[in-house]
Image (cartoon, rainbow, N blue to C red):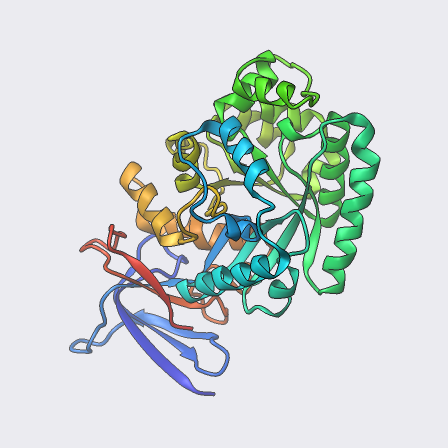
Length: 393
């Protein structure tokens, strides 16, 4: 064993509500296993910044990295979809693979140890297969016409065979209410939950809510202009529509990640808690600002004790895949949230969603979470506009 020791002004183990001030982490230099954490001895030299566990990016579309810098901001969801349809196929497979490699390498160097990633094709599989970062891949499906359901599910199972062949954890998963027929929403959700995990874009925009509640609004017009069928008008939220399409036993047994939650209300939280025993709530603040200039109701989510996670979304709706920038955005807008709690969202809760908390998510003795230094924190240990992260282990 090769014992190594690093110090920092703040050590966020996430085993406690407060950081260790002027603390140390000792780890095995061979495999990164945490051996001991604690306070430094009086007079010991202490390095600046904060030590934190490796991040878990709980929502990303890394295969869209070829869209970096190509989208207009503030278009709303309907305008964003138009841009996706126009631009997503501009690059060939070699360019896509090169950029997936570049951005996964950058995330790893910045301290991301695991990722819940969305894929619509196999362009990221060869990189994921050999990468140090753990990924669980959600094979996202679309199809607004009921008669398409069987074909779409057959195609996604063929894609799953490719992922299985590459040794990647992957399973079908639904996209969102506005891109799927009721039949496909049910079929893909049950297929995902049979694997134990499901990721679903939920209540990302008011346009989505207007579509399901009233059969109107920009999303409705966007779908109709394209000749697509739209979901049934329920008079209620899109999250309740999703819940109503899936048998309750399936909802209870799986790990479910509801992503975005910008329009989340108390009734929606109550409805989800009644039938979901392992539900996590991903927020992607910089993406939400990029598309809608909106943020999820973090105070409501905290008041209900929700298990929040943090994702970056894709480079079509973000300028970077930087978890520290997401943390700073949240700190600026919700300064009442303690830094240790923000880091719990960015590290431990994502690991729990992926069932990787035995190894990842906290600086706990015996774990191999990765150790990350966050530079340029303030005097209380919060991230600042100058903060950036660097993987140590």
